[in-house]
Image (tube, rainbow, N blue to C red; front, top):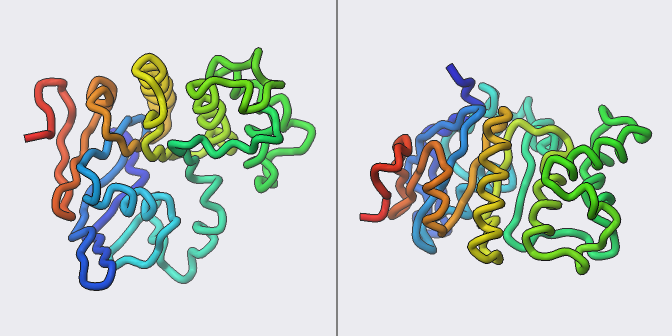
Length: 232
């Protein structure tokens, strides 16, 4: 049985009188690729911000490895979220004045468990994992969009997190690069990570093990057997 890494129970989030999320109850397991789908304005970004510990102003229960992240005794979880969760963004968010190698090393600066002398070798291994070892000394402007996103994925893996969160990671890419990114993230999930992606692309249904759909602030989910789509 795959370990549950995240459990959400009755998560509710309002912006004033606007109900964005209503009683969201779901779970996420290791070694599994999840897609979160839904039309614009359905709360996908709000949900992924909660999952990423970027937003704690909600009601309900969020258990990360069976620890309540809102418990006053567990504030260190939020402070050390980079050790638990890696982020991938639509616009890559690479530092333009740093090489691919240097960008991957950035999260390691906050991790006391990675010795300074080991950072470079680890970053090179991660770039090799995403197929960019030979581009390690290139700056973002010298890389294609697909290459920049692969650097961003390597960076997200820098602290060996249990969870990878990706918010529209292929939104700026063409179909070929989109497919390559989804395949890479699928492989990462098979290596043991819990991978959770917000996406508008139907292509993700070819890779996700489980699909959640947000609709009217509520969540629906089912194992993906490629025999249905959540767009009725």
